[in-house]
Length: 69
Length: 153
Image (cartoon, rainbow over all chains, first blue to last red; front, side, top):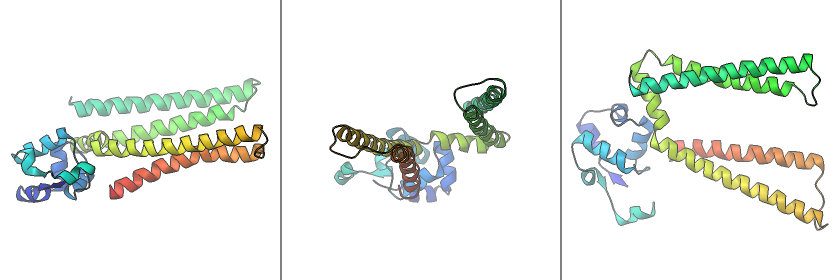
């Protein structure tokens, strides 16, 4: 699933480790999320959206093809 | 005390418990070996004790090393509770399970056909190597799968 995590993190001047600490996951998970290799659980998606003060839909871009992941 | 510190203390306690169990097993192995006649090699018990003590010591050292650093504690706990790590381990376990199932099924089929004379009966040595492989191959699949997913997943 595509997302704006990298850009939003850069705007907030957070490192991947900072963001990982804020949402209680490992840095590797943030890296995988930013590369679109991993789709987060709904809880993590909400936690990330809350950190950036946006909605989940603004952070993650869902397309029908993602259904087959 | 925060939840993370509480978790850390629990893990350290579990490590000490494992270490103590290892020491007891090691001592029991020595006692059995020198004071009693048992129908098995008592070194197995001592070996199991050393294994448990090693696991316990590793756990104690790992968690105690981070004890004074709050951030390190938080990261260690995050790492262990990380949803992606859980997913990777679950997938790796599933792959290892299917490999193990396939190997056991193949052995069962071979022995069934061997008993009816359709296939040669396996030698004890051959069977031993096959059973050893049935333990090692799924483990290798499990570890390999984790390493692969950690890198590319």
